[in-house]
Image (cartoon, rainbow, N blue to C red):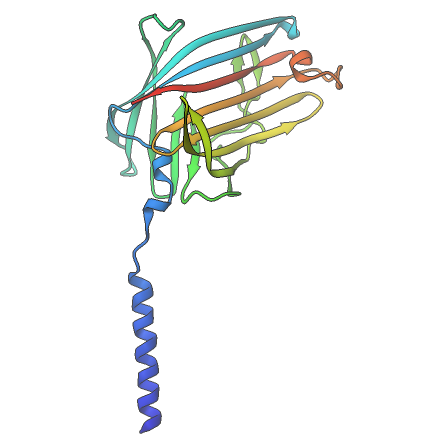
Length: 244
C-alpha cells in the first residue's frame, strides 16, 4: 500500500509539473518585434548618399537626396496575413516638395519581418532576436538575378547570408543613444567583385541606417582599393534623420 501511495504521489507531482510547464506564458515582449514597428501613419525620412560607378570606372557620379517611407493601408493576403502598403517619396533637396515614387509592402509574423522592394521579397529580421543567428534573408529570390545600375547589369544579391552581428548595442540617433540591432547581410569579396551590406534597426524606431557596397571590376588591378578599381556598381548609405 505504501508503495502504491508513493507511486501515485510521484505521478501527481509529475502531472503538476507537466501542467505548469505547458501553461507557462511566453513573454513575446522580449522577441524584438519593436525593432521593426509597423503601424498605419508611421513614417521615416532618410538621407540618401550614392556613388555610382559607370563606363568601366571612368565615370563616377555622386547623388545626395532624401527618401520618405510612410505606412499606408493594409490588406489581407491569400495566406491570411495582414500586409501593409509602404508608400515611398523622393526629393533632391531639403526644401523640395515630396514626390511619390512607388509603393512597397511590409509585414511581420511570429518569426519574421518581411519587406517586398521592387517585387523582391526579403526577410529582414527573424524573431526572437539572438546574437549570432544566421538565416537566408533572400530565400525568396534567385541570387543570380541582375539589377540595372547606370545601364550596367550587376548580380547584386550573390552569396548573401544574413547574420545578427549585435543586439542591444547603442546607436547614436540625432544625439541620443538608442538600443539597436546590427545585421550583416553579406560581406564577400573576390578579385572581381565586392559585396558588403549592413543594416541597423532601432528599438521602437525601425531602420536606422543601411550601408551597401556593390562593386565589380575585371580583376586587372587586384591590389588597388575598391573605390579606385571599381568599374561598375555603387556605394550607398541610407541614414535615418526623422521618424514619427
